[in-house]
Length: 120
Image (cartoon, rainbow, N blue to C red; front, side, top):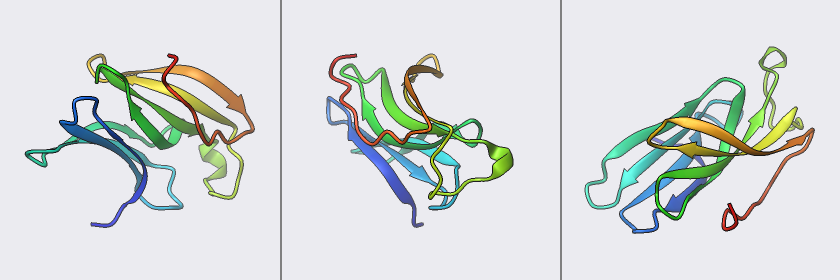
């Protein structure tokens, strides 16, 4: 099956990799999965089709307890287009055990393209 992969991060212990992907290039629906390197087992971690969409640039934290990612806040009533600037871009953190998202930083009417999670 083909996917539009928007980010990948190798675990600190090199046992797994997380991948973010979109259902289609023009779809706001994103998914994050963890793939075990040895068994190739795929574990869903995060699915978004609501306010936080277009998940990208995933990066494991140092302890493999969660990961950082970008997402876009879109107005679903207006639809989605890759050519439009989102209402907000968000740098967020997903805690794998608690299954909770925490916003780290927001930028209104902007697209964030890069970050370093070394200082969080």
